[in-house]
Length: 572
Ligand SMILES: *Cc1c(COP(=O)(O)O)cnc(C)c1O
Image 1: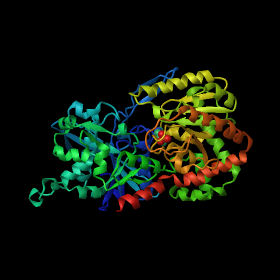
Image 2 (image 1 turned 60 degrees about the vertical axis):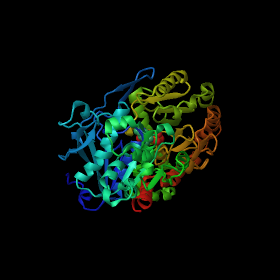
Image 3 (image 1 turned 90 degrees about the vertical axis):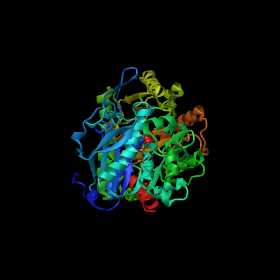
């Protein structure tokens, strides 16, 4: 074991955090988006708070993918292989899981997340690229979200079942298993089998499985407000790949009758279940009636998501802020001109980057709106272009736009969305400058959320479980202009912390969103509120920047979130 992580070496029982993806640093491409970045923020915060935690994920040695865009915005996916040995230590311990009747060997790479507070959390990146394995099995942990449904199931076996075995083999005692989404739900099956009661001690065969004991150990966080978004596997595929982890009738009771649904499995075997925002929790309760589901709204790791110029400001006026984001409550101490200077510095850094990457020159004096997300249909990246003529009329010479985002390699609609934005870019040419940055990643995210004036979000309600990039923006005094969904329902005070788009969020079922009326509201506010305020009342604009920090960043940070997980989920 790597001895650099003293907390990991104590005998104290640990919280084990499982996630298919973790965004721990920009050049380790084992994340695809919000879920992984949240996992990274969770672990960083756990280390700040010196929590007794360990984390488990897959090594994803061939990464997600690198995105290149040709002149028409056609996405070209290129290799994103990386070398774990540069960042972490391969542990000698080997364990096995059964896949298609074979023993598949798994090793782990240890990466220590160290905090300035001297806290430390080890992450174990599981790897099947082990000599003993067949070439096919060596590839199981290669591609994040690659391959077919069988490949996914194998990955989930390695993550869930392999993860529990690895922690056990490394000598950890675990007091809670926290599943970040359903990809690791199979760990519950490993625990059920581990704690089996002797058959002669029970009066009903089903009681061999100590469901209550497993429930007591497990915490489940769901992130998906859409039924089709949950991982589901046909039972014949499960039988082919896993054999019979539990008798079929028992497994069906726990995981769903027709398909093995990883969310349902998690719900049935976890004492504590939560959604990632209040609205998302309501939606989840609706989708899975009969379960007690709590709400713990996401947050972001303040230090990671604050740009350098604002870090300096906070260090000067709110010392200690990074490990105590509640100190943002005193943001009013920072003089207006210093907030503005820090903002302009961040804006120039972004614009320099945009120029280097796209050759597009943006003007720091012009109101700049940013939008960067996974390019997928429900995020509606093109809502602002619903009526291009109207947008030009409103924004000509007064507006600039910066976009970024990758589409999943199999999401053709998402890819078309990027191409559409490229074609609009040419249409807008001289009236509104628009840049689309390639290969959205954590570094670009920080430049974007700090370097624009307004952060736009236009998802279809209620499909945005939480959203976190808007929270990052608030840490840099950037206001949100967003559809009322996810976290923004909780953070929005109209004209005070930012602005809403479209109606108030009453629905808890998936409904058709009316694009035209949402777009109409967007244009109206842009024309009548945002543009006049930006150019006409800088003092009020800066007041709103302060409110974004003092109200939004004050609350939507990962320190608040982790304290909730500790009190509500980990120590019950
Ligand atoms: C924060 C972040 C996300 C998540 O943003 P959402 O607003 O939740 O969509 C996705 N990708 C990267 C690179 C990020 O930094």
